[in-house]
Amino acid sequence: MPSFVITGVSRGIGYEFLRQYSSDPQNIVVGLVRNKAETDKKVSEDADLKTRSNLHILQADVTDYDALKAAAAETAKITGGGLDYLIANAGYISPIDAVVPIGELFVSLPLGSGSQLTESSADRPEEVSKTMRDLFEVNVLGQIHLFHLFTPLILKGGAKKVILVGSGFADIDFTNKWDMFPGALYSISKVAANMVVAKFNAQYKGDGVLFLSVAPGTVDVGQYAHLTEEEQQKMGAMAAKFMAHAPHFAGPDTPEHAVGLMREVIANASIEKGNGGDFVSQFGNRQWL
Ligand SMILES: NC(=O)c1ccc[n+]([C@@H]2O[C@H](COP(=O)([O-])OP(=O)(O)OC[C@H]3O[C@@H](n4cnc5c(N)ncnc54)[C@H](OP(=O)(O)O)[C@@H]3O)[C@@H](O)[C@H]2O)c1
Image 1: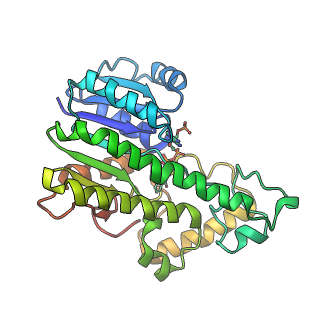
Image 2: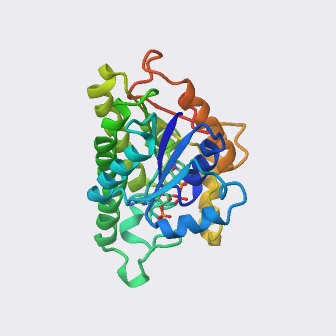
């Protein structure tokens, strides 16, 4: 029975991975979350998921090494010791830099719901520094710990695939060609996360383990629901650039469709095809939208 561990399944893209992979009763699917009680409740109220006995929810914040270690031990008990697929989906998407260029983070009131900055705290670097540290904790260090702790299980598995949910914003060429200023701090963390993938690939490719970063495209997980008028204008300008990059772009994708595309990329990718350590989109190439 193919086994999967997916991080960050409480909502968004992670929940959709949980839904799709567990729809096959042959799969064993373990979802990691920060709040198990909340996700257990959500699953129990989900008409599709509530009867699936192949689905297991474990508690682990990816910044908590001991919790990840305990989750790896618990996963081994569930699967019988090995693991086929690790989907490193959990990520921190910082609100303060969502639509503001990097220089403006320091001098103007950042946009993006959830920012704790107020007018009086503008022109102060503290929240920029804190946000960058938080991004590294979750999106970089968290993934290093996760990969380190679950690779022994993967080595005992059949498929031997470790997938990071990356971001097209981590593509430096895309950033330069289209002046993609939004998400600066977040993008920096996702570039570093891709290097985590590459370094693990460098060590474990010889053991037959595929490490690959796959971006989902732009996916509506509710992040556009409470935008102010000004934020909407900035998003509109970004969408115009998206359309220049990909003329077919008609707005954010649904989690269902995006995860379907990513699953295809994950299924088809292999070390033999040269995918080890690579960074690709939901189309399996460098077209991000
Ligand atoms: N949506 C997009 O357009 C898009 C585009 C490119 C890349 N991505 C990537 O896709 C992945 C999923 O994002 P999403 O769009 O589904 O966003 P989301 O709805 O905000 O989900 C983020 C998930 O990560 C979890 N998480 C955050 N910090 C965590 C931590 N310290 N430990 C464990 N879990 C943690 C969250 O759990 P809680 O519920 O506990 O907060 C939540 O389940 C991320 O890696 C993101 O960078 C998304």
